[in-house]
Image (tube, rainbow, N blue to C red):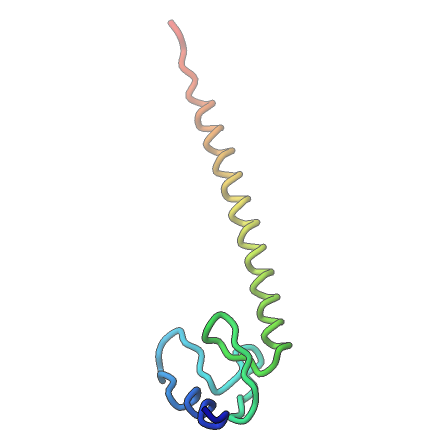
Length: 96
């Protein structure tokens, strides 16, 4: 398939207005218009970027967010364990 046909196919057959799907006409990070005759760098399957730099920056941002989410989850689970331990220790049975 000739490059112009493949590129045309890529842009022309996208679903318009589908919620949650990025448009294929602009970079998902910097919003720079994507030209039909230039390379498009994809990440996470269907998200377009104008350059390797933009794609790499998004990957870095995703990694930072994932680490923060893991820390929050760890703090939550430690806090829940601590709270559960306090609840159990307050239920001391008195032997008669």
